Length: 190
Image (cartoon, rainbow, N blue to C red):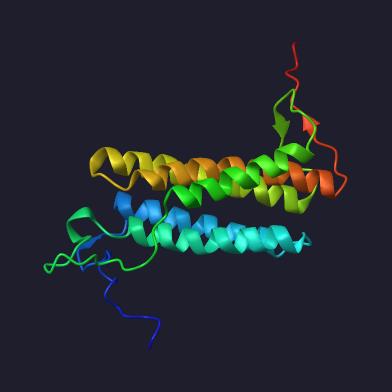
């Protein structure tokens, strides 16, 4: 299998099911941003972090591939003429969201109560979490906009919302684990 197909040379790409759209199509932007997010999560996973966190991040990466496939499938192509589902993979669902919520709750129990906004930084691994959180929020915004144009599975938006919260909490957990001071944002009133 060759990596290049030349089918995109005219500025179009195929969605799952064969529909061709411009490469700047909102659906492409949405799952492209999810792919970018997945790459940043890989960068976090490559840091010196616990094997438990690495396992969670690997699960999340797999779920992001699923979520991307869901976004790459337009509603009119979700089922075949036979009525069978075209995308024959487990979907992002309530269990996927519950996993993130449980992980967030576990981290929250270990962390001091937050009294101020926190400035990103302090350690490379912490900063990668904040970058991934920002990319996740962008993927969420794009998915919400896409949903306004053509309905997508509502669990996609919920999952991205929880994942950004997870990434924020992971940044805080890594700061604690790495003994990095969290810098509080205190507005300068000059």
